[in-house]
Length: 476
Image 1 (cartoon, rainbow, N blue to C red):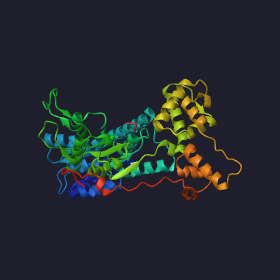
Image 2 (image 1 turned 90 degrees about the vertical axis):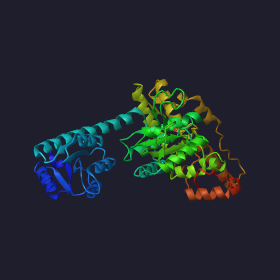
Image 3 (image 1 turned 90 degrees about the horizontal axis):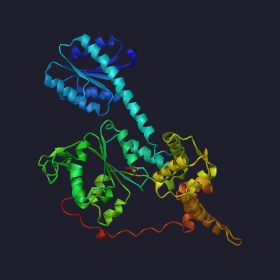
Image 4 (image 1 turned 180 degrees about the vertical axis):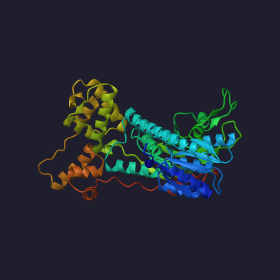
């Protein structure tokens, strides 16, 4: 093994011991850094990638176990070896529970320490390979619905990866079938919580009287049939991410309960008295317009603003038709392998028809259609005649752009723009490209020809219901 590939960090407030351990490990060929307190160690961990960290337990300001717990959130593959002069069973158990690979007692047996480092490195490689394999299997198991090179999808993915670096609450909005849960999973997988649970709950799937127990759990005897204590979704997601799908369907009582947890960080199980605190990152999603629900009094305004710290709007497929060929290719690959069929392709005419269809069920609907075609089409090329009837019928019913003699050029242009936006794409940026003009020019023509939608009248403040006193101002 080429030890020069590995970087180690030794953390101990005894400067002589710290220097001695560094020197002994350097003789084994490792790259070794040292720190005499946990704060300095955290700074080094933020600047470098360490495969193994050896840390003392008792240090001023922050203990070695606290360092371990804080560092592992951002460095899941790094292995920790705890050095302690207090070689009790309690210390060993506490270190292992915190995630340490192993521990060694002082005075140090350098032979044992070198052996532990070598074994920790081997174990670290196994963990890294296992995580990589899981990622590959996850990608192979399901085709990605978030594939796309369009500007709207690039913005969604960039925002998701950016917010993943923090624990900020995110509200994902979009029509059914656009891939909102996959955006939530992307945020989780790119965050420091990736090694912890991702727990999903559909807020519309439970009756109001059952939702509280589903979210917060219940104790034994809390109600008839509660024969055991059952943890809720918040407890199951401790350390990870809780995805609240269809948050717009959360009943009024559930909204109040959720708001209290978000602001206090604590809750009680149904029938319990103990106050429980968990470390959970909240990502919510809805296919409803929550701002309109707030205005209509169906959703709490204080909860809306608490959830919408960072909003992400997933565009419908009809607004990113340029992504359809990429999605189709991905689905063809996946389902050909899954159903053990030879690889198929869509003819140019069939692909154009798919691009013209508005896909009310969004990417989920496209995915299901492609799976059906992979299974039912015998040939290697999928032609227009092989497409489902609803696709062919939509294309036949699309009106032609009738240009009649005697029409002015302005009338022809207005008709062409309207037909393009209605039957080719609702996305103005894409429509501008199809028409061969800039987006600014298209916007000007829309305004000139009166094709812009009428602006809504602002809602009078008096129509917004007052808040009551207890509040403050999956693929979906």
